[in-house]
Image (cartoon, rainbow, N blue to C red):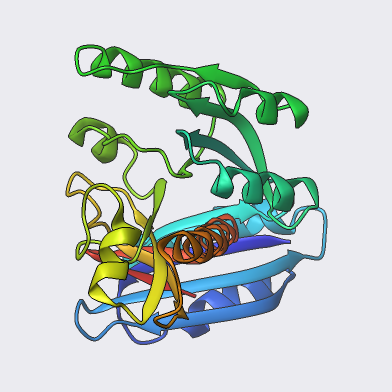
Amino acid sequence: MHILRLNCDDKSGIVATVATALSNHQCNIEESAQFNDPHSGQFYMRVVFNPLEKNSLSDFQKSFEAIANEFVMNWQICDMSAHLKTVILVSQHDHCLNDILYRWRTNHLPIEITAIISNHKNVEKLADDHGVAFHYLPVTKDSKDKQEAEIRKIIDSTGSELIVMARYMQILSTDFCENYIGRVINIHHSFLPGFKGARPYNQAYERGVKIIGATAHFATADLDEGPIIAQDIEPIDHSYTPKKMERLGQDTESRVLARSIHLYAERRIFLNGRRTIIL
């Protein structure tokens, strides 16, 4: 199976043209979704298809270049059998990392974890137990540029496409975010920006909040302001202590982050300015 994903200015006949091109080259459509965004005028499409003959894929790719030029498309074809190469960044909280490793080990996430990078050593054994390369890269204010350069080397040398901030408590530089735009997923509790800084669950408890949750988004130079990928909430009441809220919040963070990784790995996420389109 392969995935064709594309976006372009909305015009008449795109769906029919894509379907005809696939059919003409003996590629069977298994799944198709599309969306016309009325605000930007952009059209988005994701098609899962199965090449039925030996040369079907290569012939389709060659012929589709002319179609893509005609409609001025951004397009990509991905092999669904190739697991997404992924680097994980983590600091001291390991709940999201544990969840990702479990889902990866049990084949619930179609990814290949190429490295775990941390500015602390506490997750080294966890990485070793799962046979994943671990890189300890401590960071200070004076060494931040050098440490980030080392992270870049690992990402590029492993050919990793996705970078996951699994509770990585460092602010990425503007250059890093721009160089890897649309490739870095971050997770945070949905109290932000309402409860910033230390002990957010204590702050939330003192304010008597009635829901807690988590938000996964693409990292950008604007801290915690990147395009949102997935969110979830859980209702709570006055009986929840800050510790109980934190445990529930960590579980929600893990689920939302895993959902976002899965959406990315299945090539369902399209960037649309400050928003995402998910097909």
